[in-house]
Length: 242
Image 1 (spheres, helix red, strand yellow):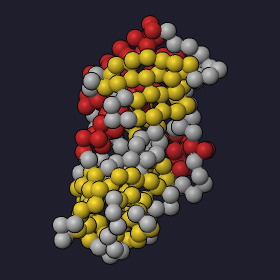
Image 2 (cartoon, helix red, strand yellow):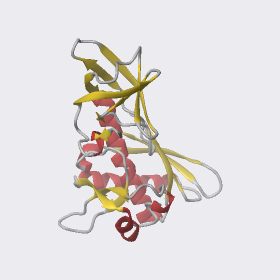
Image 3 (tube, helix red, strand yellow):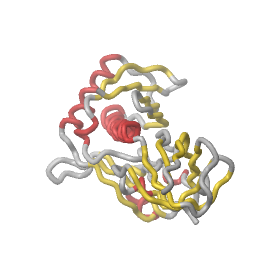
Image 4 (spheres, helix red, strand yellow):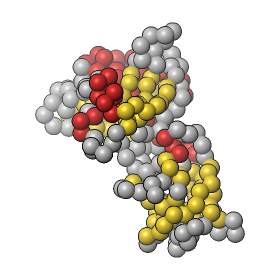
């Protein structure tokens, strides 16, 4: 049985009830979970599990292979145990804000410089994005920052939904989503959109399995703090949220 990933739809949910399906060493598999596993540049959630006797376990790491594995401190609960999970909301919410900001930044880099994102890494207090571009000057970074903050100030709605893979491949911009790199076993693709203003076409639309806020206004101010060369024709843009 595969764990139901509650975090994909209910991104603001902080607690949940579940049953332990199996254990391996210090890792537990639950039948459903709100804990986000490391992936797509977004770090894993942390938090706690507890059973009806009051026993608690700290969730220190979450990874995804065929199953979603929760690394616990101490011997995990037995299979069949009913538990309540609680995520560290402050950390999760920071990741959501940074992930939506990264989507805005990627879209702006394409819009102004035709620079495709090649990688990203988020934390709860800073982030960076790599893109295909030779060299940014400080004036470029100021221009990027100003445009991103315009989009934040617009308070644009953010939404997510699933498409079958064939439809996604036919409709998504290949400069933003390389669906052909996904494993063949993935037949449905989760889409994240940043909507336009007053019925305009979406400003950004890409495949993403991360967690996001529901409105760009929740991002807060984006400060582009610097850049560095990552090799021939690739730049790293660093940013923080205020």
